[in-house]
Amino acid sequence: MDLLPSSAGAYGGKATEVYRMALSSAASAAAYAVLARSMARELLPEELRAAVRWGASLLRARFGCGAKEWRTLVVRSQTGGGSGREENLLFDAARTYLSSRLDPRAMRRLGLTLCTARDEGGLRSWTKRLFLEPGDSTVDVFDGVEFTWTSVQKSNGGGGEKKCASNGESGIGGDREFVLMLSFDKEHTDMAMERYVPFVITSAEETRQRERSLKICLNEGRKWFGLKHHHPATFDTLAMDPTLKQSIVADLDLFANRRDHYRRIGKAWKRGYLLYGPPGTGKSSMIAAMANHLRYDIYDLDLSHVHSTMLQWLLITMSDKSILVIEDIDCCCDAMSRAVDGKKSKTPALIGDKDGGVSADIMEIPPPRARNTEVHTINYKDRLDPALLRPGRMDMHIYMRFCCWEAFKTLAWNYFVVDDHPLFPEIQELLAAVQVTPAEVSEMLLRTNDPDVALRGLTEFLKEKEAGKE
Image (cartoon, rainbow, N blue to C red; front, side, top):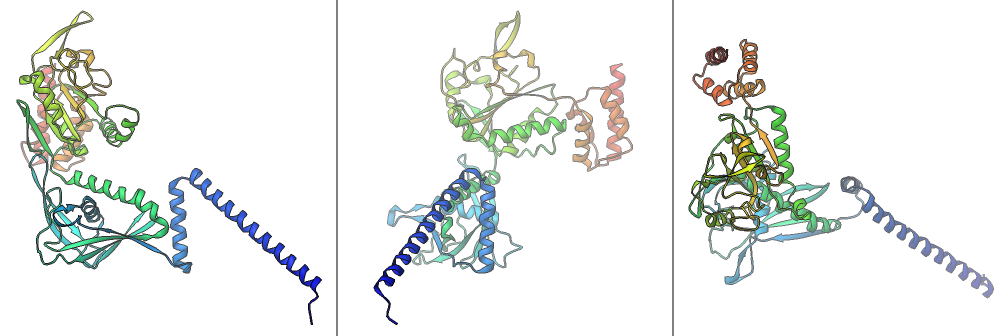
């Protein structure tokens, strides 16, 4: 049957109208989708969005919805060519990061090597490293997104030269050269470049910081001389009030993680601690525990033979992430007397009111770039000029007390792994009655390996103290 012209025109008009309506609906849906995505980015926290992405990826994998389009980043050990070849720092960071993520219990084959590294002071340290053998791969999950690392062997033209990292660390995998490939879903390209790669670099730096050998530096003239720092003190083994210990650890962690915050508010990234109390209460052990906790080097500044011109060089040449220690500042050097409220107070001649750590009467220098943490120890706090005790100079004042019951329990556990004993109630009463330092208690516990004999000796010692007090 032939279609009449009028009927054909009417049919074509309806089809056009339907097409326009469908196109308008699709445009509206796309606009709503863009608006919803923008609102989700603004209103929903990143953790929730990551969970949604993770769930969506599981659904796609379960029902086979859409084939993934992958992107791959090639991370080579060196960049450039010929004589202009340079070590790729991202390659070193990636292998350090992967070494901390690889689980030998979950993979059938892994490479193992022993690396050596020297810090800027020339101290050498040894570290075991796991690495992917060529042809192997591992999956790393970051915020619900999978990133696949693959090791691929590369022919080095028969050179057979052993590769060395830029930090002085001997290469992984002997004299074989290989590249690392990072693969991920195309839709996560921005996350990979803007968040995951920086996360890998930051994590690698934190790993190196934890593994490196700490050093303690002593000043002589205008130079520092470094030695390995072997002090085993940690906050777990410190004999002190647990509540105070927790507050110190929390303060250190908050400070260490706020470098960008200090920069944003225009404040030098440093924090001062004053440790004061009777001799033998653990001030030096506290400093060692701080260094081990933060993984910072210690610079022990002896002011007794330092002149103003020397001090400037000493402060400038300190390394990054370090602790400047000035012990016994009430007696370590000749002090100048100041009248404060009719009393004499002592202030070391090279430390005054200037935030850079140098008295304005002596010289002016900007705050040292490297002095992140500053620790002062003193036996008697009231001997110091109040100008040195203010916030910004000494931000946290920590009183190192005589041995309390909780401190004794820590010592008993450290020495004998004992948390209960028939003599404990008597020792608790004696500690409440007499003043004894943790160093004195430690000396009594060190005299024998038998906990019964040691605790009886400590009890007699405390009783003698109590009798002498009366």
